[in-house]
Structure formats: C-alpha cells, structure tokens
Amino acid sequence: MCCSYEEGTCGQEEKKGSGIGELSVEEPQDPFLVSIHIIADPGESQPLQEAIDRVLAWIHPDLQLFRVSERRASRRRRKAPKAKAAQPALAVVLFLQEGLLPYLPCSQDFFMLAPGTPLWAIRPVHYGREIVRFTIYCRHDNYADILKFYELILRRSPSQRKTDFCIFPVFSSLDVDIQFSLKRLPCDQNPVPTDNSVLEFRVKDIGELVPLLPNPCSPISEGRWQTEDHDGNKVLLQSGTPQEITTCWLRPAPLVADGMPNPAVSAPSPPVTDGRPGSHRDRTEVPMDVQSLKP
Image: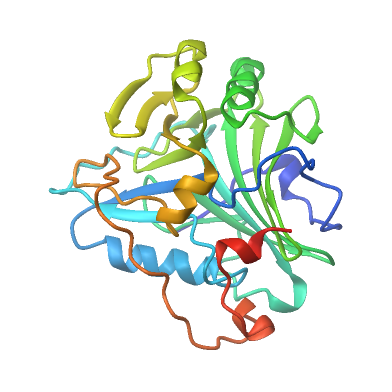
C-alpha cells in the first residue's frame, strides 16, 4: 500500500550522518529505549513481522525495534478518513547509504505495510551513519504540549529544534543512529492515531513520572503502564533500567491477544539472516549484540 504525504523537514536527504541527534556523554545508551508494538489480525502477524525485519535488515538484522502480535479475533477496520488533510500520526523513516538502497515499492514518498500501522519512508544518506527515525505528526495547536510530554518521558531535550520540527537523540553508535522526532502539521491537517500500533518507551522511576503526566496512566501488567499524549496516541511505559531490561530482551516484550504486553512470555531469538546484497551482516560479518552497539 502506497501513500503520499507531506513530510516537511524530515523529507530532505540526510547530508550528514553526524551532528544531528547526537547524544551527550551523560545520557544513557539504550538502543531499545523506543520501540513499536503492532497488533495484527489472526494469521497476519508472521508475514508482517518478516516484512518489517527485512526492511530493518538493511541497517542491521539484529536491530529489532518492532514486535508484531495477533489479537484473538479479527477487528472491524475503520473506514479511511474522507478528509484529504487527515494522515497517520506515526511514521518510520530510514536513512540508508545510497549504494545500499533497496528497491522502493512505489514512487511516492511513503508506503504502508498494513492498515493502522506506521507510514514508512526510505531516504538516502550521503555519508556517515545510517539512521532509524521514529516520527510523530502533531496537531498544530498541541505541538508545544506534546513536545513537553515527550521531553518528560525521554528525560532529555531535543538536539535539533525548530518551530515545527524537533529531533530527540535516542541511541548512537559508530554505524547507526536511532532518533525520535516530532513534526508540527499545518492548521488544516489532522493526524490520525494508528489504531494497530503502539509506541513503547523504557523509563526509570515510573512512580515519579505518573503524577506528572497530563492524562491518566494505569498499569496493564507487571512493569508496564499505558497512557496517551495530547493527540490521543497511545503510549506504553516500561519501567526498569536499560541494563535490567536489555539483559532479558533482544526484542520488545511480546503482546498477548488483547494487544497488551505480556512480560511473562519470552521473546524469540533474533532471526539468522543469510547474506543479502548490501546487508549489514555482509559488511561486518559479526552479529551485533547490545554490548557491541555501545560507542
């Protein structure tokens, strides 16, 4: 499924792999600080997970930032908004080395793997590190409040900030940057929450964070809480330190059938990929683990 949406600032080619979204030495390094859970109808999770893994494998096959699970019964899908100004609120933009760009599925700026899931875009980076960037599109009037909301959750300020766009550094290594960004939409455009996708953030001191949040935040399982931002995007908060969580999970924790995370279910081992032309494994010949991601 192909879509064409105005991307604004983040639609430009990434001309430098460094200097944008840099982490300070004081900030924690956790490659899975931000991840996305996708909830599929019965029988649809495996092909969707495989499609996402193949896309991310162009950066690194073990950098698994998405988890697809199935609900117990198929869900009636909402009709697409008739208003031309409506668009999905969540997008994932991959900046890849020009010589390694995979075949794009269509000529438009964005494509979608399944209804109710994030938009995807692939952009060239001329030199430097490759980038995975999570982007939330915000209502014009809510942008300032949403910026404060994610500053509170991420416990850091944007490294690049404009009146309608900002980038939070999440993780940085010699090979890859992971970023989280916000894009303010014009007054006549409305973002629509992705009802089959949920952002998850790893946080410390959940007890101190909950009273500061603008909307109700309730526990859904041991170590996990759910809230939403000012635009109605659902947000999962996973408590614990990066060291505690990374020791247990290479992927984000699985979801049970009702779409809520289940930390009691062990995550599968990372897939073993064969040598695809241009894949990170072909370039390094060394599987990546969490320790090797640290700069």
